[in-house]
Every structure is written in C-alpha cells, then in structure tokens.
Length: 224
Image (cartoon, rainbow, N blue to C red; front, side, top):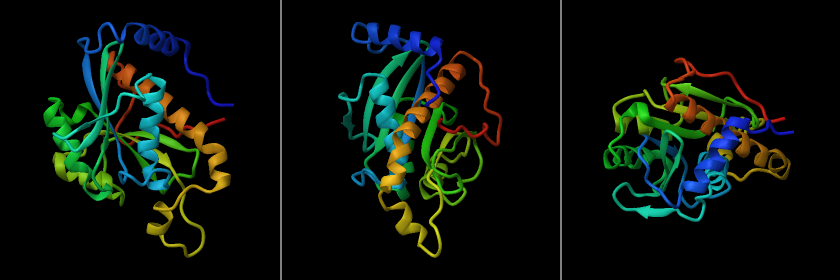
C-alpha cells in the first residue's frame, strides 16, 4: 500500500483547509512549485510533473482554483500550509521554454531561486522511483535546462519522478511524448500521490528550518 501521510502533516492540512477561505493569503514563507511539461499534452510521460501538481492541488483543496496568470504565461493557484505560502504553477509554454514562465513567476511573486521547486520526469529512474535533489545539471532534461538558463542558476530544489527508459531501439523523444501504458497506469496514481506527499513534506520541513536535502539529492522513494 501507499506510504500513509504522516499524522502531523495530516493535522496541518486539516487545520489549514479549515482556515484557508477566511485567510487565503496569510503571511508565511513563499514557495514556488512548478510542474514542468508541455501544456495541453495531458497524460504523456513528459508531463508527469504537471500531473503531480494536479495531485498536490487536489490534496490542498485548490484543484478548482487554477487561474491563467498572463504575467508568467502559466496556470497558477495559491494556498497556505502552516508556515508556507505555496504558489503552484503549470507553464503554458512548451517544455523547452518552461524556464521563461518559471523566471517570470519568480519575478512576479518576488522569489529567489532557493524558493523554487521544479517537478519533472526522469528517464534514469524507473516508474515508481522518485528523489528530491538540490541543484546540479539538467542531465539532458530540456525543461530543467530552460529553467537553469532563464534563472541563471541551478540552485532550485528538484523532485525527479521516474518514467523509465524505452525498451530496445525506441526513440526517446517518441517515448516521453507518448502516453502511459495500461500496465503503467496501474501504479501511476500511487506514484502521483506519493510524489505529492513527499513534495509537501519536504516544503514544510524546509519552511520550518529543517532542510534535509543535501546537494546531490535525497534517496529514492518507491510507492508500496
């Protein structure tokens, strides 16, 4: 079964949701969480980052509050969880230029690179594996490369969600732009749920001063 949400985190979410409408923009550490992908190509492997953002928005009860923000060419929704104010965003640009939206959002919402989380697919990890990494190269990922170029830094926190590599001689481009198979869909929802849990847990720990992510990344997690 999927690893259960920690009791403390569950209590925080419950308390936050009960007060969110009364105080939707309470003061707190602001964090930008960007799900990378090709806007409009829902359900493809390359868009798993956006799928995680949708899952996180659902968990935080703001899935019906996405709004287009023309200032950063992205869909954005904002909510609060204890010490953190979360700006969730899905760029409306192609993957190769997602960084333009992320950089514009950082400027619009007055955020430094250390306040940015990137959520994206990872060919080097099988489906079901994920890891949080601080900084480092793009490792061939065009969306991450665009963010590094646009932000002039690689110091963002990254949640890498495994999608595996194609078997045989299948082209990588065709593979990442393809949809998940029926067999993959059997585990995909658990992957999205655990990725959202891991992401939120890390944001809360970091916002409270407990940054547990060393350069090079945090160990892989696997849904049960």
